[in-house]
Amino acid sequence: MGIYKGGIGREGEAEVRITPDGQVVVAVGGVDVGQGSTTILAQIAAEALGVPVERIDVVMADTGRTPPAHVTAGSSTTITTGAAVKLAAEDAKRQLLALVDGLPQPFDPGSGGPGKRGDIVGTARVTSGSREYLTNAFAAHFAEVEVDMQRGRIRVLRYVAAHDSGRIVHPRLAENQVSGGVLQFLGIALREELYLDKHSGVTLNANFLEHKSTSIVDFPPIEVLFPAGPDPVGPYGAKALGEPPVVPVLAAVANAVANATGVWLREVPFTPQRVLQAIHEQGKGVR
Amino acid sequence: VKPFAFVEPTSLDEVIRLLGDGTGQARLIAGGSDLLGELKDELVSYARLVSLAGVDELRRIDDDGDGLRLGALVTVTQLECDSRLTGPYRILAEAARSVATPEIRTQGTLGGNLCQRPRCLFYRNALTPCLKKGGVDCPALESPYQAYLSIMGGPGCYSVHASDLAPPLIALGTQVSIAGPSGARTLALEQFFAGPERDIRRENVLAADEVLTSVTLPAVRPRWQGTYLKARERTAGDFPVVSVAVGYALDDGRIRQARLVLGGVAPVPWRSPAAEAVLEDQPPSPELATRAAAAALASAQPLSHNAFKVEIGRALMERAIMAVASSLRGE
Image 1: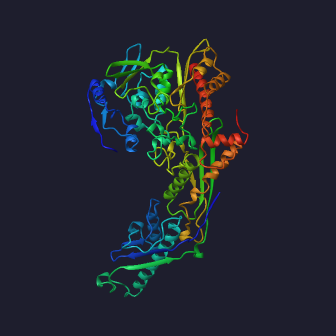
Image 2: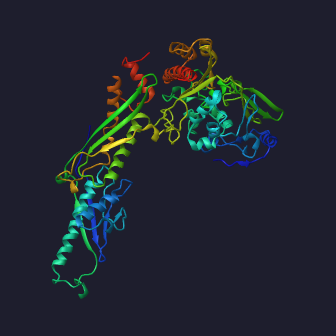
Image 3: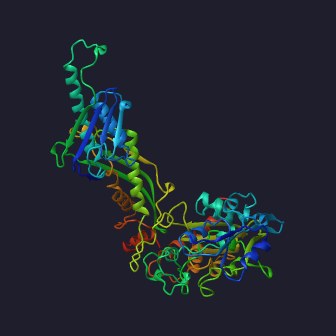
């Protein structure tokens, strides 16, 4: 089981600009490092404005054009920046509707327009510690393992990751984020380790040949489930998802090994050397 | 990478002449998959690299009916795929398949695989001292990271030979052909490898102006079969922590021509006559396999942090011995 502290842990700002030609530009200071937040934030703005998502451009991390932002970290983009984008879009929509309210009815577009030129700009800011969005993300992971008691080798045969991250804004991206996090930590569970030479201070395996990030053939298919529905408080019911997938992995593998063998592993990575040592120390040797 | 001259002769004579400029500053390059790493990490430097790529005769595979001659430039992928590596020779194809990754197998050569340098972390890091690099100290012995170190002693240097092809080739009784300024010579592949007691900076008997030109697999009795098992830290793209090549034939249910060679456990590929003697003339059984495996590692002297390799080696040997029996019985 995993639990991940939720809510808004930092400042978040967004600007949503509606241009005279009907484009929408969302500007945020965070950055899409591959997690897909460009797509997610466009979805949130489109939902708030009631326009198709292809009308939305997202500008991120441009110091000339985007509002200040905290570091992009801590599983915060959807919940924090997403909340700010939603509020900014609602602000822009209110301004637009107010403008429309002031027009003569029925309005003739050929009559020269509303008398206002330029963009409509909605802005919003959410603040750190805001109680409005306080909610945790939860996960339950299941590992099935095979342990070679003579060779000390663990193989993970099957892995299921179930996550409550509230509403899943983009299921495909979310599944990839979960399986990516699980893969990363299965690598740490089974193999990955930096070797520090205590005499020289040199990292002995500071390259991808000697530091063996586990390859895809060593992993099982990872099944990802999102059994929970929208959360009452997050933006459109969404909660944190980036880091929660790594939280339960090491314990899930260790628990599965203990269930299969009666041997408890307490130090990662669970290399054959450590597994064999634990087998002998705990009196479970097969010889 | 320190600058070097790159020359690409088209004949063996020219290769030998270019190697033997008397300074010892020339080195052979074939696929380069190991050497380029050494050069880029500045573990070694040479004034001249002599490429073998232009010497076509080294690419040949010849079946003269009395054995199979494999040129030094035959790639690991070719060994994996060549249709002549069947029956008794299949163990070599099996081992080739376990080498590195498809990309490296396509680039890497048989000769290069046999002449590869050790994977000891302290040898491979330019910032750490190492006897093999001409240093006066070996920090590996005090290190907790000893998966790639010897369990069969040194002396002096405890790095291991990581070739996946050497154990099956030795099990097959392979001869190696070497060309040098004074002509050609042939010796058993087993004699080609040399531990630190001979020269701590080298892993074989090849002189600086000599070239490994080919290996010859002798004709083996058709009912002889072998298997190669390899324990590694990850399933693809990795060197052996321990590997084992085991082969034999069965006559009336009894083991004949038993061969057992371990990889990754000693500064040289480690053939075990003791284990072979346990197996010879006996019917294969799990109990016999256990005794043979114990005999192979009876003289093991693991370091402070690699005794686990003894256990893994025993498990691999037992399984390999029984796998050959199953295969010979057509199970």
